[in-house]
Amino acid sequence: MKNIALLLFVAWMTSCSHDFLDRAPISQANESDYYKSAEDIKVAMDAAYNSLYQLYGPESLPSFFGELMSDNCYTTNTAGTVSAYFEFQNCDLRADNILIEEYWNNFYAAIFRVNNILFQIRNLDFEEKDNYIGQCKFLRALYYFNMVQTWGGVPLVTTPITIAESYALKRAGEEEVYSQIIADLQDAATLLKASPLKIGAATSGAANTLLGKAYLTMGDKGKAKETLMKVYNKYTLVPYADLWDMTKKNGTESIFEIQYLGGKSNPYSRYWAMFSPIDNRIVTAWGAGMNQVTDDLWNAYEPNDIRRDLSIFDGYMQTDGSFNPTRFAKKWVDEDAELDGLREASNNNFIILRYADVLLMLAEATGDPKYLNEVRSRVNLPLYGSALYPSDKYPTIALAIEHERQVEFALEFHRFFDLKRTGRAIEVLKNSSKNIDLDPFRLYVPIPLSVIIQNPDNITQNTGY
Image 1 (cartoon, rainbow, N blue to C red):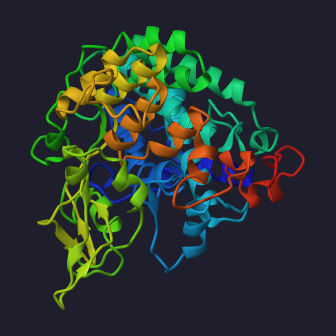
Image 2: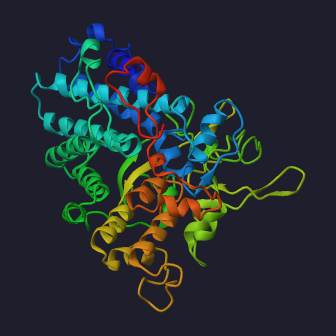
Image 3: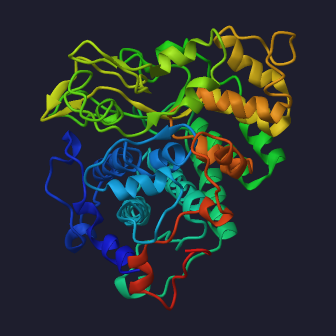
């Protein structure tokens, strides 16, 4: 718990390099005097969104829990924290995994930022106040949603607290965490507008989409349907290739998208560099070999599904003229990116929520294939229920949705979350090329060992670890 306590006081000191944080760091010592105007809140809100660069980066918790732990991906990275990577790949995590501790700290740092804005904004009065409150509550719900799916119950912090107060915190139960997520998203959906205050800011559509996903994860399909119908037809699908076109960011399908700029002097994305083959020095300047594509994912695509070749490279030619068959992500390709050392400073955004997700969640919540078929129509594939649909492979609507989500959102950090939600993770991992006998307790990751050691009276470990 010392991790939480320290972060509550130094989180503002943690940041990536980008223009809106090129200001004097805001420390706990002067922070109570900092929020004097709406402009101060706007600057703080930019810093809060900055957390997404870290929380959803290529080595983030959603990346490794969502993809590397699934049948979609493996890693070839053998440097640095290699054991930590392979523990995710093999679903065999240890409580002393250094990435787990890093993720825990990063999420609480992000939660500190939004809690502090919510605490300080109460003393101010300006036109956009409610919208900023809604944005903070959306972000806090997003963070806790990732955490509760990953760790189960976690300490629930919703206001700035002292170090002494932090040591009294215990893990809240999953139900209590979900209740907070629901309450935050309901408030956010009311306070936010359909259009963002600025590009990349949360909207009522984003709040309702995440709320629908939370209800679906909780098993409440009725509430999920009711909520997602508020988003239905408010967005439109775009040609699949446009989703990954850097000149067409924030299109009509995008619901919540992390904003990046290319170039080493800007906040740039690293997916292209980190997800390219390890030390290739041809495709990219170096390549980190993370989240490489398994045969399971490649073979999941139906014949003539254009999404496969828009999503995945089937390998690359080496300097000696031979072909390296390592398959890797194409969605974030940026061949013209400026180099920052051996890393491409890429210009790709990262989409957290998009309209295809709404449609497939509605199919899951209702069992109605019409929503599924809207997604399939976009790429001109046979509709579910038609004679040409591969019903021999996907004989039920549930399996059809599972298949569609795998290929529609390939490498976008959804897969293991999806399999866990539907209760299919154990069976799918066993029957995959990984052939993992997944113990049920490993559907959650361990609480970081350092947190247990620092507060053993109040923080308990997940069963099995």
